[in-house]
Length: 436
Image (cartoon, rainbow, N blue to C red; front, top):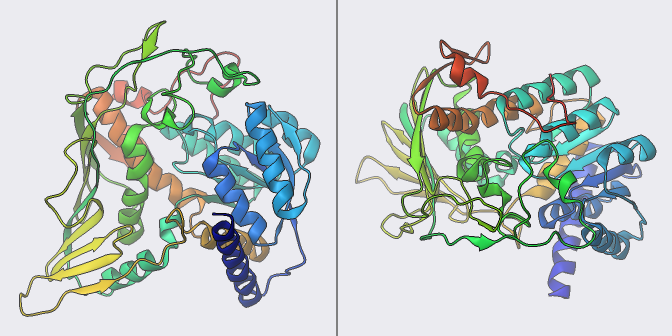
């Protein structure tokens, strides 16, 4: 395993070095870089930053002392840096003055931390989706504009080679006029059993972890990692997986957003959500279907956490249904075009993913540094990533409201529904203040 990790790291470093040579950047420049949220995914991003040779890791922030300490040891082993450790991101920004901030915290923290980093003059690499609610995301766009910094969002499928190749094929007209797109992610699952709440781990500030969101009892279903399926902190599978594939649709279409959205779903297999002093379950839907009506086409998002999809060729991705056939853009299965003409051969492109996790973070990081140095928009810039993030967030508003909603994508307003409009924001827990 050690040799494998060394090989992956070395390969990433070699690729990044050659990329910077091509882009004409100064390979000697190292940016003072801080990571907020030192879990598995945050460290994956930071390792790519280190492998690029362009990061001087000045600080790490995590509400759990052990996590931050272990991450510090790992950083030191990789490049010799000795980052300062913090529990509060505000103290980090004030004392360390980083040039780049990586934010890999749960969704409910993205807005406040990104905005604070922008105001501190740092460039930001923040995980997707942009915000937990639409108005948070809008505030992130405003802060980035006002600060004049580069904000890259972790929509790495925009730059993954087989995604780029498939998008070029799609835009070439080879699929013909596309009238409908179906994005989906299916997996196995079943009834969910409640898990007992437990003591907060020693050295962890659970109050700070919850931050502006509701304060729940600590539960290992929730942390680490499980927060994605708790509505107080994220937006379930549609907010997690869905934003990647809905972003592919937005990237292809060029439209600013849908005109109408309707979403339904529930927990018929997982069972009722449980939350009390003794135990809890997740509360995100175990399945959802969301329909997005655009000007030129209709898009559907569908996920299911049961009845694992063994009856179709693909379990995840997007089907673009066109006059000349169907294009599937997937993950580890690359892309495939199924022509309408039975005499025409299928066309296929293999995936070109960065292993072992199957993502293309190194490419996205390289693009981020290039955008900073050339003062240009990165491939997953905050404004377009915000528009893509609005899709699952609108879907969740429709799901909660129990009806379709009309959306003005230009003004970014829900039309004629005051109750649904209120769901574009939410109440923050004292003393945190919702961003404007």
